[in-house]
Image (cartoon, rainbow over all chains, first blue to last red; front, side, top):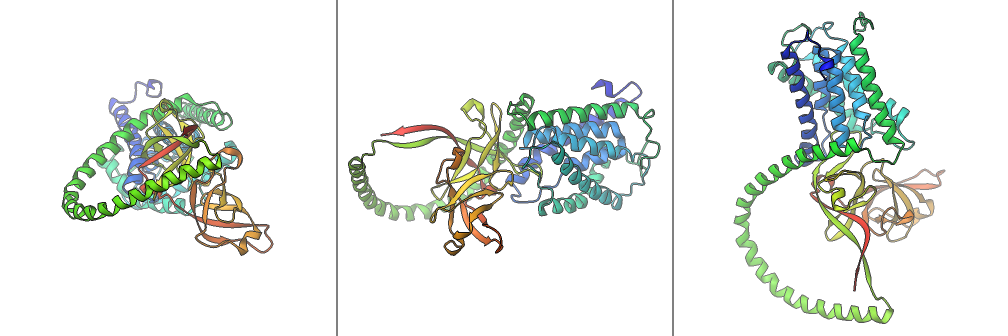
Length: 180
Length: 279
């Protein structure tokens, strides 16, 4: 792991990465328990995806893709999905989110909402592509479902709140301009 | 967005990406196209099931404690009603014993020596899906209790065995069940009354003969057919909710309402396939 963080990175950056990683893993566990027992039959928002995308967008490709990989792998371990499916999708999302670091204006509401809207759609496209390329015949994720459409809406609406929490807890930089 | 995303400048990022993508695809291909169990997934399942178990047990402790206070209020009323019912059951018990003796006698006359029953492994539900792509349920028993991949999972609804799904992943202390609501689970089924066969996936029964349209209706019961041996026969799946099928199509499509309410499921039984014989 140390290979990914060379000397020039501060200890604070490493710490915030591990805290973010723990947060993503915790969110995955809570998603599996909370939505099954407390809000049954509900559409499950992907909090872990939102955190991965924001951390990628504000802290860069490297941290985004690593968070995505480990978060996705945890999801694979807790569901009936083939191991590597969610890891691959979230790695790519973390990496792609990282490409906008220092390039976009982050306001507290509109940008997070739109950003996560497109990221969730991207998740659906990547899931379909991965399933088409690597899954056995007759096995497909429920991408074209009402549940997924609602997830896009739900993730987008929750995005400003998650963004605010991440900013307040200093897991992502607190300045308006995404970056240093 | 991708302006300035040169390979030289972000060499380390691209190398990491390549490594992570290759690792993910490697795992995906290995597990999707082979029947060999993937040890890291089993270890991960055990690790995360510990967290899930901890959260569920803590939640149950608090909800049961809070519930027990209000429950005491109802106990007195229920006690009086139960005493009245008890006297009625005494009479019913005598009738039942009489019927049981008669049944044993008739079985003997018909040549049935033994009844067979499939062994069941009880388990508790400790988690559900983390996303909307694949539906799953996590249970707290695994290979240490004899659970294996592809074993059917049932629950009792009003005293009837009802199908919950099938075990798709097993670790030492937990297992993942694909429920009947997932469209990737295929269950050979039939209509209980008229015996028309079909295939249930994602709560839709396909390939039902068009001849059935004149005889079947909403509310008819759907059970497992036992075809190809993947599920024992006559386990309840649900009842017919709607019937559709175009004129030119050879088969009907039945929408099914499941017996099991997966959102309220707490305890299940895994059918181990070993027959427990009873005299």
